[in-house]
Image (cartoon, rainbow, N blue to C red; front, side):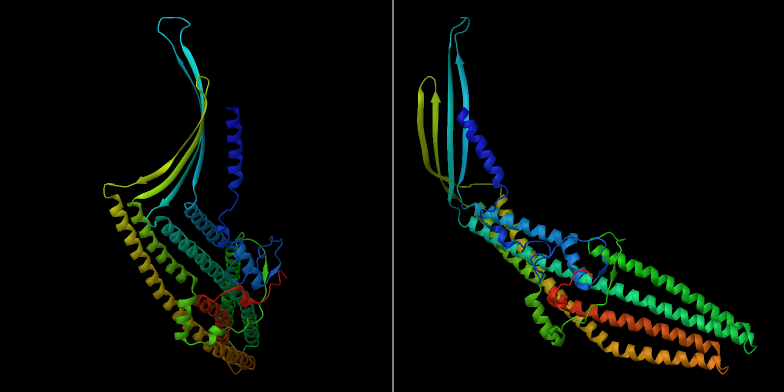
Length: 466
């Protein structure tokens, strides 16, 4: 009995160590980390240094992909799917179990003290069972889980692209608000100049107090606008910190990135982009894999209501202090035929077929959404590209108009309304120009994401914190 206890202890320790193994090698289908998968290097996720300093767009994207809970959750889901594939593959291997019992029996005659006999018996048995045939249930389960793993891996790629796009958007939003602060300060300076000119003209007796009050009102409005934009800049910094998986109050700065390399997607026609998205969008490919998994699931359910044939053998050793030791071996075949399960299998098949229809509907719905997303992103990109030239011209003309209006007013031949109106037009033109320039970067990234071609390679080589 002691030997059996020792053997059981050794087997338990071995099973504990086996929990960290991957004997069926399903881990090879899982990426090395949450950020790996779309052009990111294998050793991407380095520890985050503090303080962050000035971040490039690439560095911010790397931090987000490594540190954002969304990418980590998607990676974990892939690991779960890989483990499930291992479970289904394990059904092709035999199951082995060891049992050991020690029992004592005592018998005696009633009313006669000291009479009776005792017997001790040890039974050690090794049981092996192997499923020989199940009408394709195991193979269908492996196929279903393999497709589910493919879907999880593709969903991880889609999640990475989503986080990457959000990082790009938030990064450029922060740059836009930062530049808007500078523009608002320039507008404030223009208001101060206009106010000073109104005061000077009023003191010279060439204008009424009304000009001073109007200029003062415009100056106060400029101060108020600057305060609002400063708040928006702080909000944008917190939003970018959040997408990077950092506390919203994390201090850092950003720098304007170098122009991105030419993206071939920008030169393609809308029809070509829609067709490319149908081939390359990871979430759409994941939806197709889900359909294949659901198809295999029907076979799995059907096989559960069919016979199974298994082989078994049980060698055992019985040691008794009465009969001595004895070796026994039992082996044979086991046929299991489900006869009636209260129509459970029938409705499980109905459910599996409905799940397949649901997966197909989800795939088709996503395909329609992808087409619309490409159309919207392509249209927005073309609009921003055309608006960029117009916004630059608008700033130049508004600046000339503001300078002319101020010069005329200072010369005593203009009025304050012309100055204030020109300053307001210049502020609006600057705002439009800033928003259009950074929107163009965002719509480029949006189009790449819609096509399924957004990756870190779009930003060149990693340069780390600067």
